[in-house]
Length: 449
Ligand SMILES: [Zn+2]
Image (cartoon, rainbow, N blue to C red; front, side, top):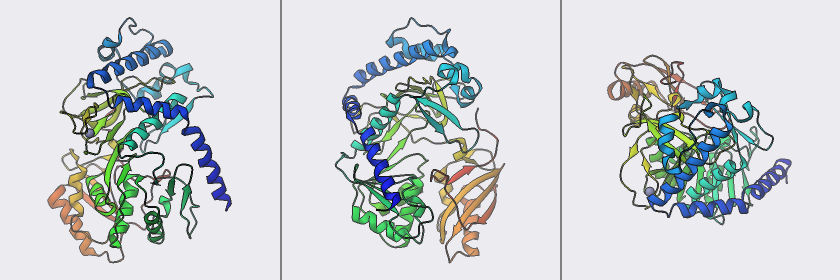
């Protein structure tokens, strides 16, 4: 056993002990009851949680000291809408003493979460132990939609450091026997080591794979170039936008049903894709409103605004995210009582605009790459008004005609007026957490807030 594998044994053994305890199992049992409730029963539960969160915020945060207090759970959503202001990241940064508990000083038993924020200032959120536990329970409830139980083998291809970054021979993975989990090093998912990783995955035959959309897509790309396929029944994606071209190739090469998940460090909204392909807003996780530019509720596209149910260490009320979606009417065939939303889009740093200033949909942007060969990896960046930089990691046979085809596609199928520089790169690195953004807005103009 090497030093690093001993460290991994200790790390995952401890983690299993702390996380997979009876408290978690009890929380999961409760959450399983919720998804069998009627819409009315679930709404009653949600009213109680919302009432408790609001009352707690009024008691503990100076920002809400003057708010009305004599309201019932049934009135909570209306009182919230009519009296409580919408806040956002900038409000938290500007009014720490009024919106953080204990004037912004974290207690030793509280956990701290950080928003990554590819643009702008990182933000710290205090979390209660209950919130940490519930997050895990909600994630595992989503897994259970694929038939997952702790006895099932799963693989993970995210940002975990399970092999030294300079390591050049296998294993580029760690078998966490406490959770029957094969952790793979996404940093070694490169031309030189892809075969070893694919072989190990094939041998493990996991029932599910947890991945970033970009790492699952990179894996699918290696499979495609090798004419290989894997058979992994479910792929759970999270933490990055999942683009249509990524979804299509992952489904084709991994033979998987994709179950995407939407969440954020602030933990004010949580949506999970079911086996019928619908995104369900988990209405026992938080209270979510979709609001237009003027802060009014809308049935059209609007901003996701959430109120916590489970993190009373720092109750965020009506916290507006830069993510956008809309309600999807109707009921899903899966029968769960959670409302549906359209796929979430439009984080400012994940969206680019064309020559007319309107946001270009990522699905439209994929037309740029139609029939263009010899590209191993790409990134489309907005670098100025109506100016894009397309960064390419070219394959060995990449030529000027591939570049011309790409530019021609953009100007005939995506946007005729945008100015585009194609830049060839020797590497398109991921972030420190191993994530990758296919579309990135690097201009400083903010679309909102
Ligand atoms: Zn469903």
